Image (cartoon, rainbow, N blue to C red; front, side, top):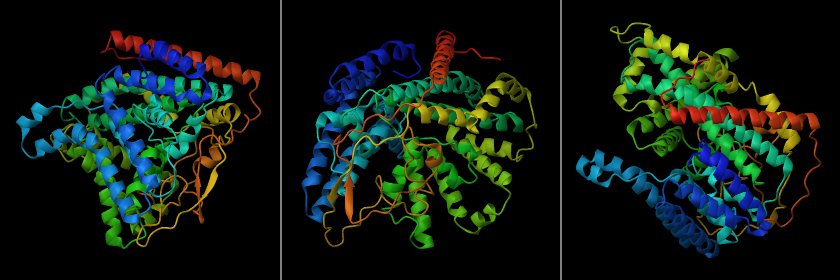
Length: 548
């Protein structure tokens, strides 16, 4: 089941919200788990068992890890937990790739395993959960039912964000209906659906046809295809995050922002501070910092960057193009930490923005290409290295003709044109407030040789993080002025572990005017109507082009 289907919008979602709110607050994880299992099983009725087994093992192993005292035993338990949790991801996502690299093509064809929905996301959530318990950053879930609700929660199951128990778990212990947050969530869902169904999917029709030809027919066609794909992937991925954040808000849960206008970045480092924030912060906290982060010698810094970015690329897909895409960013971000980066900062701001966009666009060539050969063909065409290709052809002209209105809208959204309005609505409908009062727990003594716990929510960020990724952004409702803040206060001598629902603050006083309420209601209706029209049109006419 996908978010943009009519079945989800007009059958599943209303029933899920009804089931969620008709049960007592304490037991709302039960209908959440049931509806999430239905959502998952809709397309994979067998593999739903995999996520349930992952959740059962992670919860049980987390309890064992929490009770362990000896430092060496705890490290052993952690590595066992990580290894077991990684097995489904390794088998279902990477086994075919490994067999092909070993020239065992026949075996790969026989295996041909399906890729479970969301396996990359919930695997990382489970690993982060275990590492946070190991570092004594969190005490873990008090009940299996609540943990299942956290891990299987359908809003984040398809395409993230990668949420953490320390942020979401306490809210799931007692999720309450908040009319303002519900209304803001409905607007985020409607806006995300429009962004996905109307803009991203329309661009995808053109982009897919252009890349399907193999090599570009002209330099112009290459540039047009890559630029359109750059807009499509941003609209597509950020739309899913918008929908996920909105769905969670409609259930009284605040997810953290996952995209923060990445194409306004002035460097590759800043791009990854704004793109897929939950993934960047995960790699920073759980891989980059344990490797030593940036507080190491230059040689080790390069080692850390290349390892982290190679794994980042591989996480996105089992192909060498993804690995090269990750290494591409590792190299560029490494260079930005040298004299090259200091020279870049002295350029006019406009040129820095151009550089940031070009770095992202060039990177997407590797990400979108089906092979390294196709990527090379595109680079040769884009940089004029193939004299046999013309500068412009009919393919490029047709693509521009079909998409120019969408491109204008997409560029406006990517530049943040809607941000002032959305920030104002967010501040009025969903002002930030603490859902729980943190409990202060003395930090346990660490055995000799055990690393100081760093990373996880609330820990200090090592300079640069995963190539400069900031600490996780503020949750839904975070004021715009504070969203760009990176890092968090340094940990003191005590450990702050958020215990579920110890104190629930009263809802803040509403600041929503009647006029704004009417405006948001009409906006939701309009966006849902347009999105539904496009979904129905593409469902029954999959090859239609939308011309404006």
